[in-house]
Length: 213
Image (cartoon, rainbow, N blue to C red; front, side, top):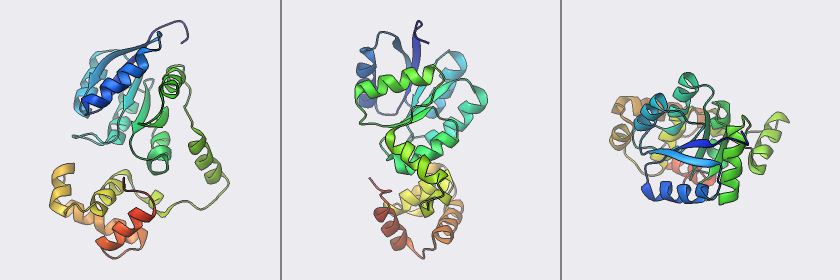
């Protein structure tokens, strides 16, 4: 949409991050940060009541994982372009996000021109694919081996990162609004899929595969 204003919704629970994104996007005359949200629920309410062309969405939200919100947005607003902007590496979440219908995936340290280009491309109905993501897609299509944790569900991957980071079952249950027994079930599934025995193994696996920041 080269001749019209691109209305953007920023979704991140950190005001400093939103301020930085707003400043970077302000240099583009055709992009307008129309509103901001600090939680998934607030973002959903805004999307339901206002019109946006692009949503810039963080994965690590306090009330709901960004990928879960992405799934909801794809159902309720299938034409709304959603760009995932995250501190997590492309290797961990990019392909998952694209499979769920995201218009692209950018690390939070992306320079302003890259961010602006991605927003414009998403608003025009395209996909922003970085060189790193393109390489992952090429290897996947070529039948190359993928990481074992790619077999985990989004929730299992989230629980794995928290366990590997030293969080207790109770702490994870509180953080994700789950019961302790459900978290224990996820842990068992993760260990089975990754062929690991205990939390020490989980931590080692996460470190080796770059799943911890």
